[in-house]
Image (cartoon, rainbow, N blue to C red):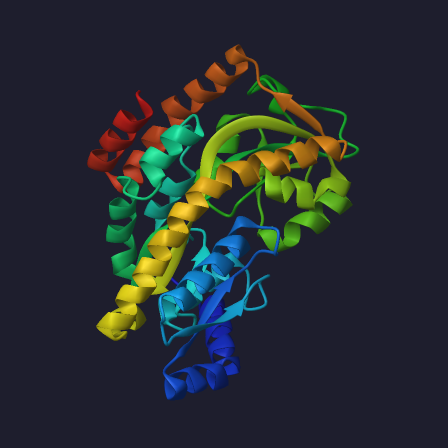
Length: 335
């Protein structure tokens, strides 16, 4: 399922990083830990907390930490974790390697932070579901990292703010993540769905290649505030990423060190789930203060948006993951 170009890219990066990997093997105490977002993002705060916890546990292992995407964007880092080039990363589920990972983007599973914690947080039912999928890709998820509810935004210069779907969406080019489920959702809502890597998004908004972006938590909207006009709070999915380790690397760790690392990760995950809601709400306030119009959907428009996804997107997803998983998802969502 890995394309030739992606494989060449990953192998090239493996060669570039070979010195670091060799040094890691020789020292037996350093490992590459990477994430693709900047130092304002919850990924960075979580990474720093973990390294602090790992040190407090007296682990002999130290992270060679790479924030900000200097080892590739989030999709690339997912692939490199599969290949063992990056032993540990915080990244999203790249469904191009397994379509079942589109479960992470499934629309309107939960409505609020309390239900999100129960479903996706520590001890929640979804981690076991995800790890059954990851095991086939030589990965283990230590947990999920919440980033908040994602919504849609419109760039400056577009004289239209869509709140009722599909009526308001006609003719609007909406950037979506490169995922079949994402394309399906925004086609069902009436938009012209434009799949695009995150690395190309800001320039596309500047140039008007797209009229808006979907799959945007508040932190990312704030980062692109100079090109955005309106933030429409569809809250169509709960965005969560994965704390991934390469399975072979993880299982080859000395048992005592793996236990210390797992304990450090567990404590960090509890912290992340406590802090994430505050961080998300803080960035939403910053979005408002920056001058972007923040618009809530009416109860009627939200109900209509939900009904479209439950009627069209959820059956589409059932073909990928099977009826047992989707039965569980319906019970979780109360539909």
